Image: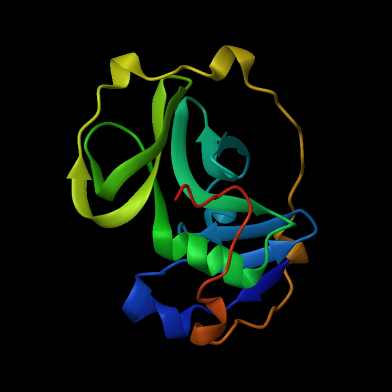
Length: 170
């Protein structure tokens, strides 16, 4: 997996995680070293929009650790997505959002995709679409030892990029 430095973007865009790439695609990891927290664990990646909210599962506890992007995405597309959208996993309210794009519940846990902003949005977890029973599971082993270095784009190269799954409704 490639590791991409976000140093130039941290202050301006609040991109404080690590962007990594492997044979399956990109992972924006904001829980640094989560692979080393426990000896035995598994992750569940829940599809929301065209990305996946990756949750580390240890016993009955789940922690949102990263966002996964398929291999069809490019680095500029990932950067634009991260600048535009955010995912909230957990109870209401969803902070740092100005508009909901998609809301669902997985194993009783709210998973919210929204447009990034300075707002705080309330939601009723009791009325969210529970997808657990019909969610299609795929088993994939992602080995963090396979991370490889990737060039990070210049800031201007990431502007005005169209990316998978987001259409302009105008």
